[in-house]
Length: 153
Image 1 (cartoon, rainbow, N blue to C red):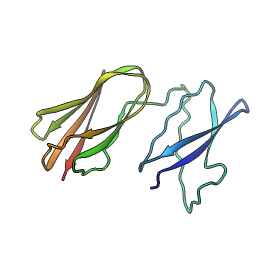
Image 2 (cartoon, helix red, strand yellow):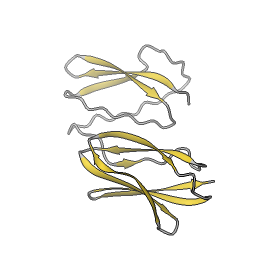
Image 3 (spheres, rainbow, N blue to C red):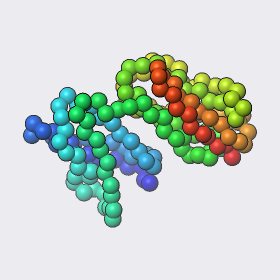
């Protein structure tokens, strides 16, 4: 991938449209938007600023309006040496706790423990004291819980 701006054209059912520029800075990037009106179509790179041989655009227009859900994404890179990037998604205002554990279940740290508004979040997990091995990252909020495996080399 290349770090670059990407334009998205959103056409709404009422005949209006909006051009949004986002920054692509990772593989498998996810974007989420919330609008006061219903989108009818999404166009990726409408002005053809990017030369593509093949592309796929995946989007979801929810009937209920809120298409976000709780998601803990896999850290990148994985495996990593001393730091890794972790992103997660929050659909409603809620307390979010993200904890790191070793392979024996011992709590190492709690890098996130606060109330969040809906949106996408990212942080860098730095722990230069971790030895090579398998570790776990756990996200908790209300009834939601998800765990991802992180590998340190």
